[in-house]
Image 1: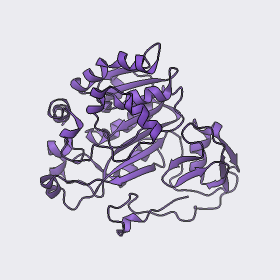
Image 2: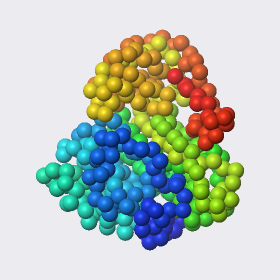
Image 3: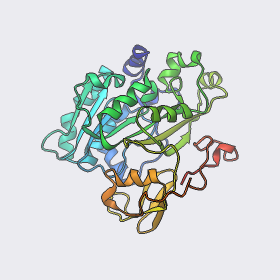
Length: 351
């Protein structure tokens, strides 16, 4: 399957418009400030973009970021602007043709951004074999990936490798494609379905269990949208399976609890994060207004207090008294249904 994916993204696809579905495209319209950064990326790099989300979390200034499956480098060059000259971006991809485009325009981007020295570098390799790339364990603040982990044959190896490379309190922030049920083996083995990011899509509950097993407790869904499979032949083959583009954030924080436990804690967002002056969005159920007391579970407290976000918050309470589960903890499909009347359209919140 490695060879099939390399062929699909290296030779079959020459630009985003060659895709047969919208699974590997971004439907969300970026904010104006972010659009300006994307517009500064070289046109040839933008044309070969195959992402399904926006992998630019908050508070990136000076951060060291790894991009898994960087392709032609669009996200790397947007992130290079967000981390600034004191930060660093490393992109990893297995496709020679994609990396050639990324490398060809590296100096052009550094001049366009006004950087006196490059803050972006690229390495060829497989994201399942990050330990072979000479990257120092615990050396990255953030790891991103955009619609690529679904293409990996060994997804557990990808998550284990990411956890190994992150600093304590670091995060894996990535967009990918997920399925409402397990994709049958016959469909998963189809090179076209795999290349279109459908064959390798994980059943969402299998993904959340895998994340916990590889060192990322309490996965947080940031945003999601249903994928419309408009190619009639492909739609007929995957009938009965719903696919979703979703962005998750996974924190490297040891001993996060398996449920949202209530310790009577709260936080107050002070502001100060560029682009999030009035509201900080941790995930789909935590939109924290500036200056307002916001009650949180123990895991959310730690995601703010033990990460790069700590300087932007005030923290109320401790872990001395436990009050049980946060009211409203529940299960079910976490994504937004294509049909607003469908049961999965009712979002469940843990805290």
